[in-house]
Image (cartoon, rainbow, N blue to C red; front, side, top):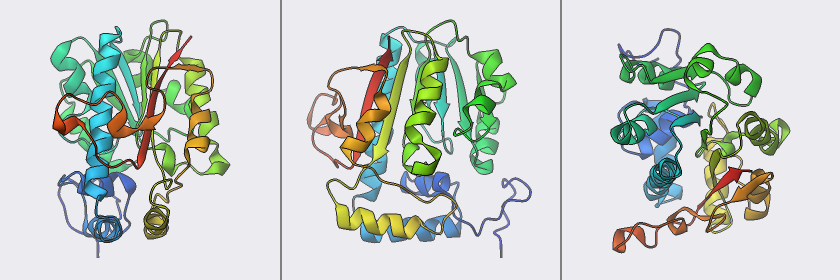
Length: 267
């Protein structure tokens, strides 16, 4: 039986796990259901570093956004943004620049519902419920057109989402469509889970997610790097998340290597 939460949008089947809510669970969030926690627990049984991997990916997102701001970016399009947790893009950028604009895009109803709640009264941030694999729908949405000025550089984020895009849907082609839509000087941040370092464990994670709403497709470095085609890779290139501009001190060193990341500039 579906769990009776007053904050759940009408019509949501809480018995079907979703990637956004499993990720929320791994990050220590509270907007997930028993079905999501069951999958999350399976992931943690298989992959003891599961929470650390999620946190490492989240940390890369923050560092990427801060670098984009240093490069003069003031507007951000976050594709597959997931359920809002502390440290979301708008919190990071608007703390530095209240006029910075952010649009979140996700197809998960719970993620969108909570984003709308958090962003209420924030005129410089919005959320779109859409499938990012349909770029024309996203780019033509009124919220995107109202908040994002495509004549100026855009910070485009596809963080921990491409490993949910099957080969049939063409993840590289999806990235290319958005790349083509943004002007020169825009920065594109991508991250992607890989089985390069833990093939057995990651294969079992893929199996655990097979019957969820969002099956996973982990890719190797040689499969991920071509997604930056048409972009000038910023240093240090495509590397595991902890190795990308690590923060000074012991906290910024080491960590799980299971997420490849990078940022490319459109030239």
